[in-house]
Length: 218
Image (cartoon, rainbow, N blue to C red; front, side, top):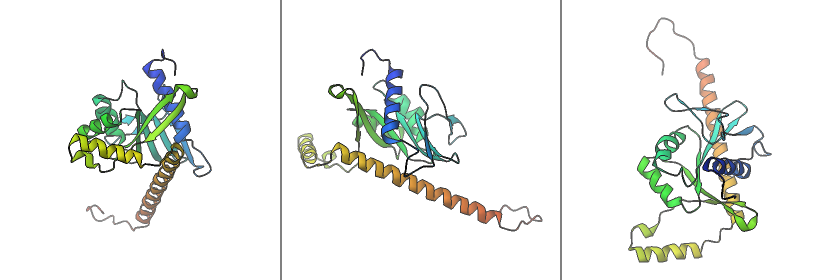
């Protein structure tokens, strides 16, 4: 990545490449999905929990306009308390899976920011460009596994961490495959929720009306 790129340019390039790698819709598995990138300018807004309009960096909807998943793409300069409070907290409450992409090496910082801001459910991913591979995009999934290192002295914790890394056989291809499976599973769960919601609305429409009562039906 050229060193003279601005933060906004880097963020746009990363969002574009991440969308192509992880949210490449429509595809054979989800022909009804479509991906919108809200960088460098807002293209598709989403209604927030308070009725406000927000613009996640990556938005995936179906052909009916139903939100399926969103993603935020941050840089070294935007992975901070402000983003956690004003962006991540809102994106995590939109009723769809929320993926948070931060620069490589900032996963632990991001976990702390999420915890301090009270943000739950964010799926953390890290990104970087590899200079020796023609600036190829490299993505890593960050898990929230229980870590014994939090309960033991730092030295033993680092030993456990080293052992955990040594016995982890996951390759980049396997991580990408797991990510794709997780995206598909999230999409399927979202689809089921929408079907159940539509069924409930249809059932309510078939209920007889009671014009002589003022009590609300629940």
